[in-house]
Image: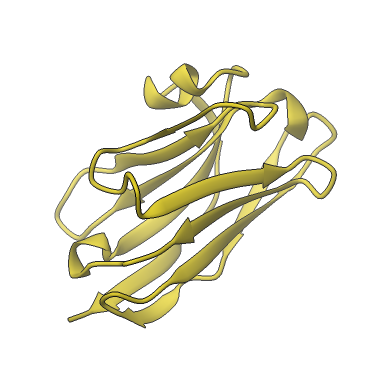
Length: 125
C-alpha cells in the first residue's frame, strides 16, 4: 500500500517557476515507477511526466518537454516536478501517481495503482 500527498501548487505568472512535491508513505515506494498527471477544467486527465523506479529513466509529454523536470529521492520517499517557463495552458490540477510496475512505460500506459489527491496550479498571463 502506498499513500501519496502532493504539495507546492499555487498561483504563478507565465514564465515563472513552480516546484511540486509528492510525499509517499509505504515501504515499497522505491519499487514503483512514478508519474505526474494533470487535469484542466473540462478536459480529461493527461500524462505529464514519468520516472522509473531508480530514477535512471524519465519520459515527458511533448507539451512540457524541455520545461518540466521530474526527479525522485527514494531515501526520502519523494517525487518532485520542477516546472519552469510555465504557460497559462499549464493551469490544471496536478496529480502524483504510483505505477503498478517499475518502468516508465507503465506510467505512460496508464497502469497506475495509487493516486494522490491533487494540487492546483494556476498560471496567470
